[in-house]
Image (cartoon, rainbow, N blue to C red):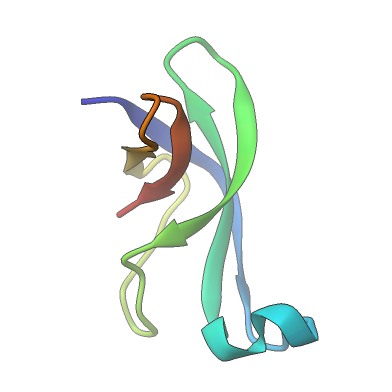
Length: 72
């Protein structure tokens, strides 16, 4: 299973109109095993669930096997 590490993160409380139904949500820069970093909305997070820099997240993959996002 592919994993990544939270490099930095923010919790979005006031989102743009197209994401307003998802707020609040966790957005993070995730570093993968190769050292590459990408920004992703992290699924599986709910208000009150602790998050920390360095925490492991798990890759979610699309039909072709490419990473489509991350989850707690």
